[in-house]
Amino acid sequence: MHKHTDSLEQLFKRIVRQYDGMRKRNAFMEGYKKTAPFADNLNEFDEAREVVTGLIADYEAAEDANYLNPDAGTGGEGAVSAETDKRMG
Image (tube, rainbow, N blue to C red):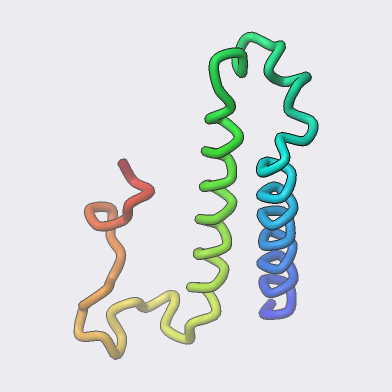
């Protein structure tokens, strides 16, 4: 399973890198700017980038031996719950 998650993590990192390069140059964006959802701004693309960045962080966290038991070895500090998870908002 480790190989599977590592390869997915690398795939997501590569996608973010490629997106950042294209977004910096505004490559392929003109067509989107002509459509209703993107006429004012391209924030949905940036929000999607943040979702993928969150996936990368999840995959990196899954590599920790205590991933399924976040309280082990930390004394409860740093444990993620619905109250502390920034994605739950």
